[in-house]
Length: 465
Image: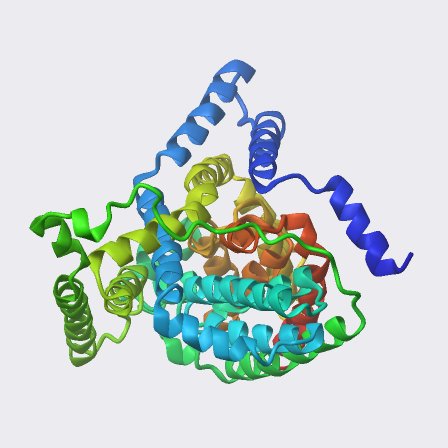
């Protein structure tokens, strides 16, 4: 038995489902907070009750729930867009060139890395559907491929997303006044002149990040090709996706009002309205000197418009939404659990303790590497780039000030660490697993392989630049 087979077998035996992992992490963080983070002078029972309150308030945190709904819409609308006829034709054409595992893994990973730098939700759904199409074609043509490797290649957009246009922390720090708001309760930063914002020119379009993005676009596809070259074909069963509503009324039995749902005019009108509104928002933002319009709301509006026009009718669009929603079901129930974990970690001081320790053992040379690894560790517990920035950001800003280091590079170190352990944390793979019909443990050995490639690139960049 090869090392890869032993590795895969180990994870098949020890890796729980993402929901079970979320539940287990919840109990673990609660226990750590109760046992090791009790303030002096506070008795055990009141402290335990306080920790439970932190958990409750985290689960039902209003801004976090808004963020969760935005993320669900990005996934659902991205999936809907990928189900349009133009997108399907494009994927079908590309799938014709994916007749072997190495070639399929290379092509899928290249497009997913490229799209991941643009928008993580689009990359995730595109990669999942692309992998699925390749498997369906291989089944029809009698081709032998390693389906889990191809699917894992479709997840690679999540290891680059935080360094791109949809990176949560990069979007937030580009907002005027956000840094001041985030650090207003820090006594160590009182009287310190902090930048009003850190724009994309210092993060997304920095020399370091552009070099990293180019390296990923080259190394990940070639790494995927090498992985596929040495892999054995696998037996797989493609779960049949529901493509229609069994209870759909035949068009000939519809009244005039029901037929309205199948006309193209309403869908085109609403889609056109959404896109025109998006253009107005972007134009007003740019003309006002603020080019930070690329946020979840803007992306969802664009996806909505393109999805409506691409499907051509309200009924087709609604049917695609029904097909896409199951991919977000795990996020719907697991996000609140992670918000509860986040509430405990923030209010009990766990994240601050971790980050402060990193600062205490850091020098100007090692600080970025320590920030990278600490962010990766926190992401395993709290798989939300935006949420992680809200709790770890103040520590990063304070540490950068104390060590007199560029804030922009510190933010990028956190972004790199946050995104790379998505290859270890299966939470964001839920939509991909739903579409491909695979399990987390099927793709994990291969996503860890991609994680090692990313670690080498990110650490090298942080040391060189």
